[in-house]
Image 1 (tube, rainbow, N blue to C red):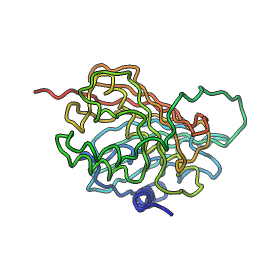
Image 2 (tube, helix red, strand yellow):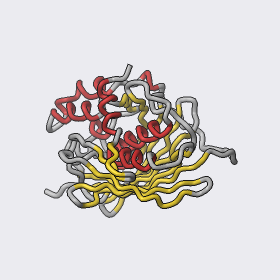
Image 3 (tube, rainbow, N blue to C red):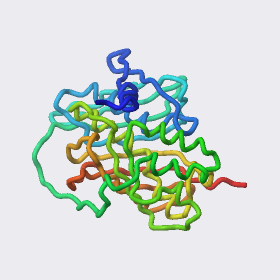
Length: 293
């Protein structure tokens, strides 16, 4: 049975085709007054994937967030068919709102083939079933937020996903001092998905923008926008899809930050299946600014 919040997210990703290579997607309010970056990235990948020959799966994407999106307006996705080769297909997608580009994505798709195999081992992580759910984690700490409604907005925004932190997230660890710039979360959708590989890749893309810069904040003992001690936004995002996976089964998102400087922070991550297969690599840079008094 599909959770109603997951169905709402699936409807959001089911774009309307208005021309051969032009699609329109709805939007919805996020926890901050702009379109959630993971939504735009996932919708753009859906648009690209719907123009790709059958049998070719997404293996990478590279994207730039150009302007804040308006959550009250639809988004138009314009797809350019850059290349259709014997094994690889390349697509470029521009997301437009109010006549201006807000997001740019390039994605590559490949016909499966056998090749060399190796991977970095999965790091130690607690059993996801042993960790608190979002409600169990957040509701007891509502009074720790300057604006307690943030808790409700966070839970609503993440209702389609069962996301569980291995350690205290930045917004609950603020003030405890710096710690190792590393964060782990387990996630899976709150309901079963169809077998379409593109759907699972797009759901992982959606979730990948939720927590990737947490490790930057942990390195400095900051809580982020939720507690008002940092202002941030995604700048660019890259993903490589190494092996098949299902987004409705537990995935470990192991994240760390090698650097922060110049008002920007870098997050790198790997996503593993529960049985230890490296499924996805992710890199993101974002604005990470300390508000001035």
